[in-house]
Length: 119
Image (cartoon, rainbow, N blue to C red; front, side):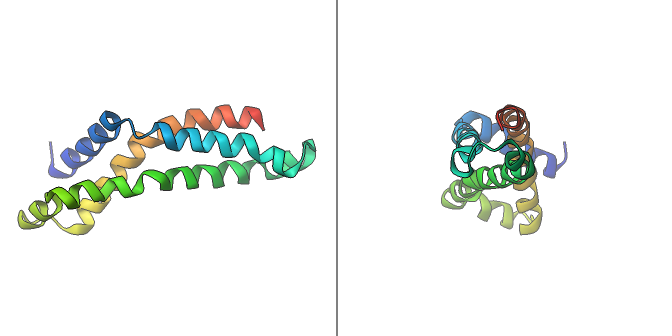
């Protein structure tokens, strides 16, 4: 396994082990479900803005776990060790982002199906 793939696999293990996907998915569903209460029950309006609401809620939910991508590794010195071993900071960041999206996107897609049915 290449170094990049091992970093991505590490991020996936950390994301699932910590159980940090529950809060962003719950936040996404709450935003998507409560938005029609804010704009009103008109079906034409909800049909017109529904896609934008889903995208905005998904992007906001994706921002919630971003701090946990770097902070634990920075505090424990893992990023310093990777730098000493010759890893480029951009490669480490790319591996963390890929791991984040591979762990977060399937759950978000399932939540999108639920939320789009409710709008």
